[in-house]
Image (cartoon, rainbow, N blue to C red; front, side, top):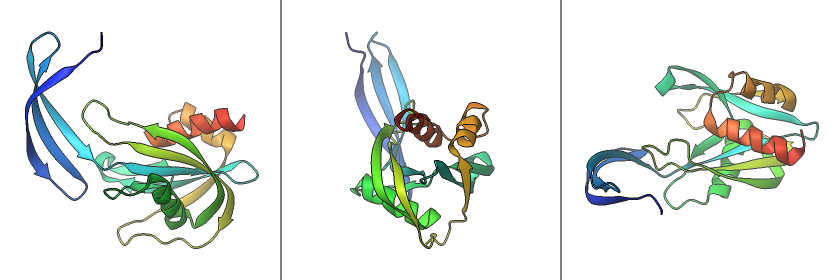
Length: 178
């Protein structure tokens, strides 16, 4: 039997620039009522750039929810209806200056399924060509190059905490045979 919840009603309590918050009253499969708080998000696209020598390029930027800098793959939010692949290519160019000849779709990641609808579409980029970055006005990013092995080690030792980056490196390790 599939698990389920039946929505009785829902209310939008906040609409912002990048997300909407709703509350929902639901009936659980055991018949009890529960309230849910749901964050609706358009999602994002992310890309792991890997050069011909097997080096990966990660960015470091300040992330306000955690009040610290975070090491992560280039990524950005999707505009409503935007193609995730096109967004990933755009973010790669804007944040690192790279364009890529080849992309592999690494699938999607649902980072916070307990309360948020965000889906992050993740790609692996190879055949890199360096160009100029094109940061947004409110974006302050530094790019770092790591060997794949060092990036993998940082995933395993907890240095890298960002979910989309962990997923990208784990999947790329399998695909690239690293």
